[in-house]
Amino acid sequence: MLIGDSDTNTSSNTNNIKDVTSENFMEEVVELSKSTPVIVDFWAPWCGPCKELGPNIEKAVSGTNGKVILAKVNIDENQAIAAQLRVQSIPTVYAFVDGQPVDGFMGAQPESAINDFVKKVSDLNKSGPNIDEMLENADSLYKEKNYADAGEVFETILSIDAEKKEAISGYIRSLIGLKKYEAASDFISSIEDKIKEDNIVKEAIAALDLTIKAEGASSKTSELRMKIESNPKDMESRQELAIALYGAGEIEGALDCLLDSINFDRNWNEEAARKQLVEFFSAIGLQDPIVVSARKRLSSILFR
Image 1 (spheres, rainbow, N blue to C red):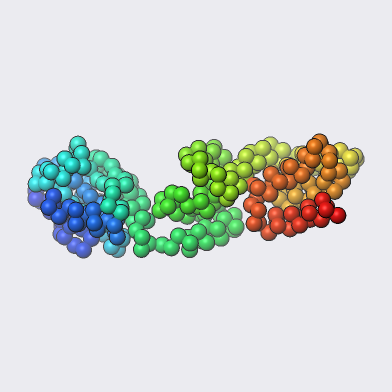
Image 2: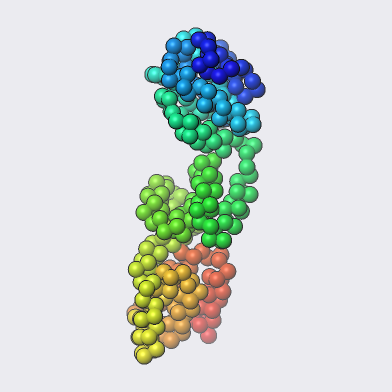
């Protein structure tokens, strides 16, 4: 029975929707949430907004096929637990995972917001999608330049594990691919400093910095090529061309340009070409096949 169908407003006590009291709250919510996420709905028979919220949240939870449990607590009959959890107004909804409240909201919400909330909680189910498989899927989407879908998968992974460094890096790179540089910068600002120090995250941050730097130069490739053709010793134009090629998405061309510069005059401007090349390596990723090949060529130039 859906909330609002009667004054008693009791649930049907299906497998994943049940009435909970102060006496069994520890067992049915706290302990159960250690294996399956539990959403707790605090309501009362006289509460109008509760009658709006109830049917939608029950419908959303039922649609998770058991990945989420809905525990309904009538605060008139269970004032102790409501007071313990500092429920100030109703409806109040909490999500419990691993024995702790991790998210929640107060007041009636649009059905779309309720569905999003339940989906987010459902994604926390330990028996849910394999994160490694999700990462593999997101990486494939990214390599296909489907940045929007890749970003969504990376974001879902982060809702499950906010410190998953591969997902953090992938999400930043997906935003770069979508040219959402401000959003990427805002996201980076929200990351803890210790996570920013991880190599894979540092590389993604470097990629954003370099992309922003190169964005304005990408339209100058033809002009710079002509300058170099007329004066092969124009090392500054070579340097600018490499950055412009990177901004235009011609990654291999950018690396080749710098390698040619190093081969031509490695000491120019205090080894500026080599330093720029190292910056490119960091932004692209040291394990990328393009970088691996370029590093081999660099070694052959430096140590011949």
